[in-house]
Length: 163
Image (tube, rainbow, N blue to C red; front, side):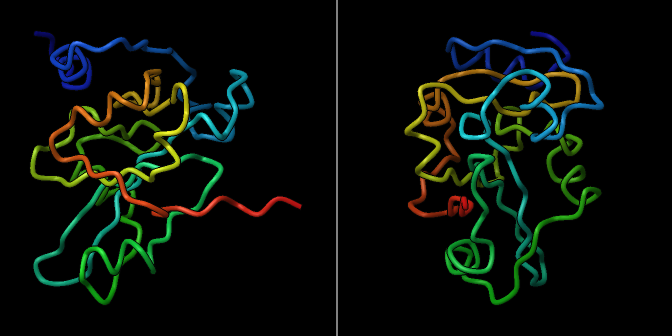
């Protein structure tokens, strides 16, 4: 065991993965992909959404970077809550223990649901946050299915329109 919950979690899964170091200033998806030669379609973002009721409810959503999360449609309906929004950077950090640009589904609290857009599962490999802004995790999408709180959700995100 290390003092690193992301690495510990990945090791406990017994899967192949790679930690990919990156400049923290380039951790945001578009900058990372451009600087390190990855495609948006192989980069998966983990976004925390909050259901605005008392008490608040949270879900971590994993989607490809070439898509937008359907937060006011699929996410809202699936949560069964009238008002949802993206969690603020501070709220996301409080829920996950990770800063934006590094949020990953590995090492999240066990009681935080993780919804994965079905398109993520079609990729050969994905690049995810690494728990901090100075690294990413490269692994197969099937690794996500090993997380007990993961549910693959059809049409959780919609691809951006290209012109």
